[in-house]
Length: 535
Image 1 (spheres, rainbow, N blue to C red):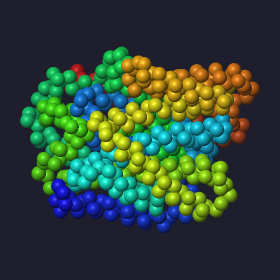
Image 2: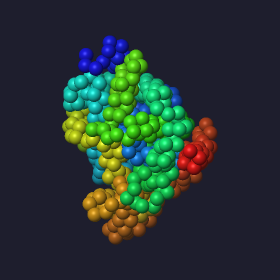
Image 3: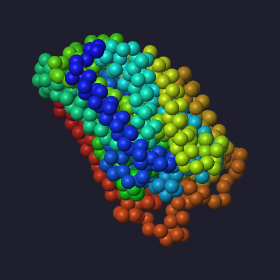
Image 4: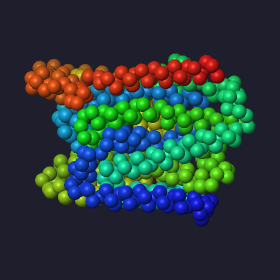
């Protein structure tokens, strides 16, 4: 049984069985491909909100956040400080567009706004980006299983993939959401247990430990350096990573697919607001744990920084702790992986198979194809996951860095779609290509930190797209219906109310909860300033 006791095995096996049972039970409600993608539109907003949170807070956070902050200190929190700002923008712009048009894939918007080639391009960008991200998540969970049980990482990768595939292919998005709720509870409980166990094991009191860490430069949440080569500055967090995370939540099928399955506009926005208020606390907890570990281990080097949490748990005498940790990391990873598989299935079935190969088949046929495509994508994810086994640094940093190369293209394609009158499809595609070239040059010939890649890619995309559009196609006479201005004009002509049950359904309007999110963002800044100046 490797390093596990009977109790630990019972915890892990019960957790895995419960996920499979949920997938089987919920599969009885899936009759069509649309049920598979969006469910029955009767899922509570709070469950969707937890699912949105769980998808991004993965094993990368449980293992990668402490590994990152162990090296860089509390300044890592700057990267995850921006969620309230991000959610305000996503609720105001992206959600109304997608909910009003009734799309299943958010990339349908690109076709309506620009054309088929644009939709195909952004779909491929999403598939590549998320494939690599999901592979990194899969590697993270396999690392835990391999460490705890004593099997090799590649075997662990295959086992985790198969279990996730089964419940995702059975229950679709509904199974993904409800297993996310279960998985989030386990993840949070494990994190809290680890936090208090670590405090109890510190050689000094918590206040004395923080003072010592302050002298070592680890209590540094507000890094005001303007050096663009530094990763965890406050400017990079608020400016560059806000742009990055807008794309993660707004222009990402994996995230938006949940909100599209909400009962109405209000529920969709409430689920995202839940994420905006909650994410800071989750990330702060695990980043803070990493900083405390630096003092606990006296800054010693690890062969693989991502195993810091695991080594600590292994050395504790807490009954079942290793089992809980294993279940927590599995839950976080399977949450992210199942979300990705469902999104991959949606994009490949709706965006490619149905559109270009078999456009007039029955709903049952597309459901079968959707389920079969999850098998294909599971196999494909395993390949880069095996490659990531060579990585020794923080998998959270690795994951974010990999995705940063694609952010500029996705954000500019939506930003120009929302706000530009004169951008055309030909100009847009030239801008996307120019953005990738600019990032390759930036990576090889400058020391600029990857956190700024989203800004660089977006700016180059936008400037080149507009210029190329004017040069090739000239000025457009009318605003597209699928711009912000076009949508406002549509509402004006139809005399439709701007609000539904107290929530704006017209794009670019801020709901009352948005102002609370902005106030919450200011409070988190004040909180970090107090830590920096009074510890």
